[in-house]
Image (cartoon, rainbow, N blue to C red; front, side, top):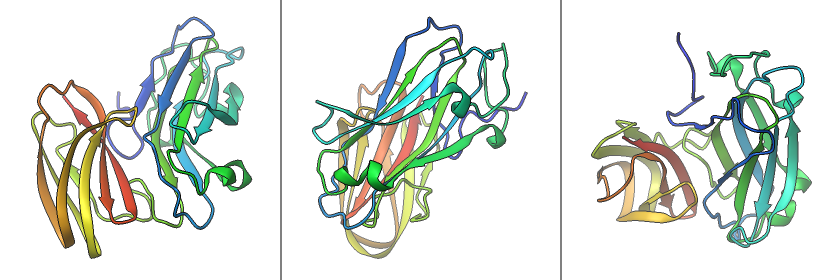
Length: 239
């Protein structure tokens, strides 16, 4: 059966919560962001897929934000099972069959305004089980007028990473419309830097090769591309 376990890029976050004991908490924490030069509204956009296991399912998604690298968190949004549901009720382990079984959501305006000029900003997604089903999260994008975007957003720089998933070597290419100092970093899902490469001043089409860092476990990571004040993130999977 054809499935769509990611919306845009391979490697969405899946919480296998089908059959989990109610009350379990699963968290995903973003890398740290610097919005100290931001002049305008902050936006958090994301996509998710979820189905209730029964009419009594009461799973929840809570979204928090922090400006001290996660020492303390402020709750910004709670989404209950009824609002979360992107597909019909099923008593089988849920896997989205198409992009039609995904939802798009966002947080902006006054809910994020106090963090629009902060440094060390992190976002935490917390899923709390309540007798429901599997949950998928994808295309997390936090952005503002400075151009801090995830690859594939409207600020697209034609960034490609192939193959993805990969085993030993990645080839990446992107296009810059103006000269910029460029740096690549590889981060784990907590935002910890594992590898970096300074590409110097670049413009136009830029291509480079990334060898898998020694000792790196299989799994999902974030590839960060920084071009002056613009920062992009691309999910990658090492097999």
